[in-house]
Image (tube, rainbow, N blue to C red; front, side, top):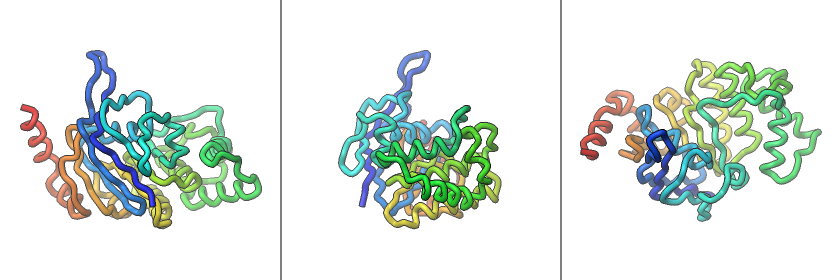
Length: 256
């Protein structure tokens, strides 16, 4: 059993006006086998949390800890955190011209495992993973995400998730830009990953529609760089009906 434990996390980014604090003391614990959904309005710091956990150098952790199985990984680089068992599916996956999907996947798997996968079995694993998300095998020879539609980019992220099989997956608005068919296929991929029983998910979203396919154990409301409320799946249903305004107003009142 693994644990991802975020304690009193404060994060700043550099702006033209100097350092700006985005995260203002986040506490969150995810155990393997659990799905945690983070919901909140635009600009609340949800993506900052995702990138900070994953080790993006743009985000400076000024206070607090990110513990993976008891080890503080704040001092680790993004690739070291990936090898330790973290995976980030980005809201806007980047294009990598000149690097084929097949080479990218094999290089990533080699970096994570410390040894190259056997070619005979690896080729089949890649084909099978792509088939499960309804991706044409032709995509394996194309440059990473270059010319991909939004849905194809997100399906490729799920292929990576299944092949790399990390301890914890951080999914930053994976549902963004997906039509109903792509949303279902992507959700099925996440559910296959969690069905192993010893994997954890931090799912960041604005909307409840993906939660109809991926059932969270816990829902956290994120406002103004903090967790403003938390509960079970019923909290997401309440947010769908009532929105975030009461939380936003409470956060503004607390700053006065």
